[in-house]
Length: 127
Image (cartoon, rainbow, N blue to C red):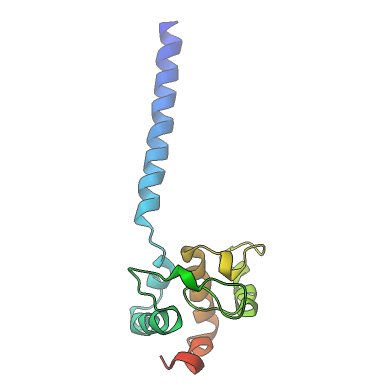
């Protein structure tokens, strides 16, 4: 009986250790990580896009600009542009731009940049 209890406690402790490690890792990943994986020379333009499109910063994303009409989200991405790039970064098709997490929005924005550079934003915000 004592041996079974001991095995059970060891199994439980490894489960909690795994979950704790996952939670710690999750906290280290910031919403803008996909943007930070792009060339560092793009960061000033991304800062400009965030400010002009949604009055956001890397420290404070403005989530109030999520809506179903027209452009939406932190990067003010149009739904058609979103749909054209979201599957490339494994964001499920059922998730629309206004429903996406900030991290998912950053993933898709980075995918758009890889395909088209800043052209989708440049005409509108002058960055």
